[in-house]
Length: 103
Image (cartoon, rainbow, N blue to C red; front, side):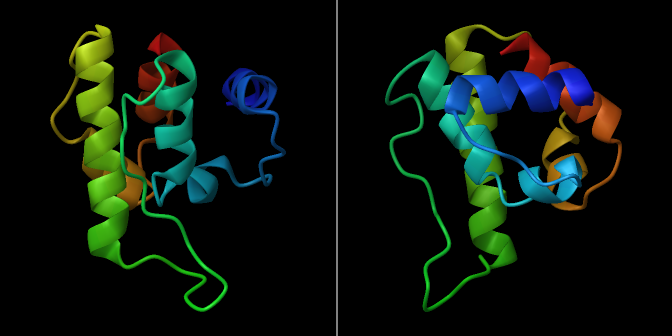
């Protein structure tokens, strides 16, 4: 996880919290990562706002689905169809790490 955190932070020029899984749960960082690799690969990203600081689960899922679709278009080999659940439910982080490292 340390390598992935450093990789994402370097690419996106951001600092991620110590709980990497929680940082990826809403899909925002993942979508920005895909757009860094291939600009506009995720055309619309749902982001929290000052008025609504936490995204709904539906928006989180949509972000993650958009990230996975962008990865397929970029050419990352498709992995488990349950990856969306791993991200949004904050489980099996090692699988998410392997997938994101491929991007």
